[in-house]
Image (cartoon, rainbow over all chains, first blue to last red):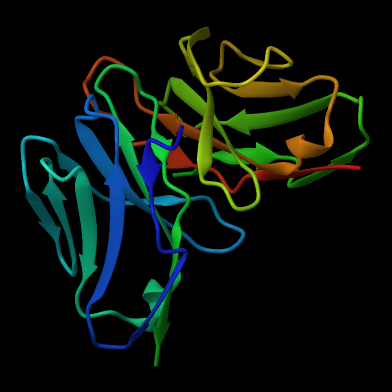
Length: 112
Length: 115
């Protein structure tokens, strides 16, 4: 039962352009969503989160959009930089469970 | 401030053996989480410990177990190893439970290979 899905295993984008990473979920109980970034041989690092009561959260070059009716969220990176090349995981969680349900990840490659 | 540390970095075992993985959380964090990342899969939630108690468990068989020590460090034990247990095991920690959302900070992981 895949509650969080990232249907694009990989994405290539030119430096300076926008990167859009997508994520779909099925669990209506999720009330927080998170994006993590993972470099090889390192643990995932937290990037940005969004509460289910919001539809947008921005932090510098990173913006997460949430469409609750479609059970869809996306991460926008503008402008993309070569250092953004990593695997990006989205996750959902329900308050009080402290249990993150992760997607399978999208490998982003930003081309210089 | 030191991050989450895990040992060993790599571990090679044979089928049927037991594996023990260790995790030290960030100072001040009382919650420890364990995740499994098998090839081609996302991070699968295994266990959550807080204040020495198991608080939540993912959909894994009982041969996956662990504990949390008084200093909040944690061990994950995998008994009767199977080939499909080969994966990257990630530990994360967060500040004391009690709020609705606590950011989890991850360690670099232990790569377990079962031959």
